[in-house]
Image (tube, rainbow, N blue to C red; front, side, top):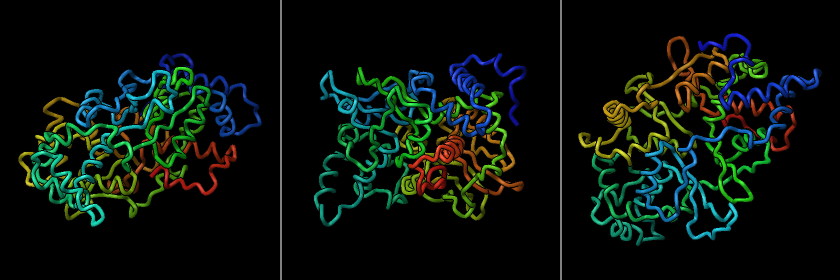
Length: 419
């Protein structure tokens, strides 16, 4: 169990996130006493502009030019340890508005899935696609020509090394994939929006965005990027404040979490191709899945969408494997990370909690471990559910939307947004 701050909660708050929490606390103190805690919190969040949110770390403010190659984009994302970045249209005029300046968000996962879909067998309606691809790859083995998510089992240990060495990979520009199915639109916040808007936009967006840029309308440029992790960190820094304690001390079971039943958990077995794991994430629109031991129901690891980067940034680590299964992927990447002394959730394995944990403990665990999901287990370590990174804020935002009778919540399904 994580400890709380000692002494007065107002005395030790010095981080920018904690100061934002203190601002909420000050508003909380002057709210009408007849208001419920949820109504108070709703009013507090509505009163604070999004511009008050602390600036993102410098590595979060990275932009990628539209004429960068996929190879260059992957290197930029890997170097700065980020999963996605806004794409700037190099052909936009200097005085362009932000709508014309940015053409979307490019993601690690989007690049991988786009590459794989380009290599699927040609359809009868486009018989020349395979020929064009074969010419573009300039010597990549024949396997690449026909490999896609549907034929993931055929991926051998040399596949991604051959792919990342190909002219096709090095010459394709980021703008070339701008209309692909994995391209995320550029949804932005304005500085005048409220903090409550952040919660509603991220929660209600059908794109399930993990970050939202904030733009300066005058300059037409990004001023800040607010991520799910940053919001979780802000909440963790508010430990001890009255408004946070009124909600954070509730147990997960009291809040109806996890909403997903064990038989609905999407999983992959250790002997299945790792591309099957990423395919399931794409199809089910989830950020990670547990890896199950062959012949049992015991979990041996977790693969998240951000782990897809290791297929492109370290393709040489799979040399010794006939195929890249979920098990060999976990083994190879863990070995690579340990050898390079890199800290990553994939190394530490699955992080679990129980239904009797409080929301505050869940937030502190997500923040301290820098992970995007926690698995709920029973006393025998059997899986009972999954709590993604955004589930604490989703739970909070839903209660706020119910409180303010938000019309956008009509027909809203909590399971679709926090599973």
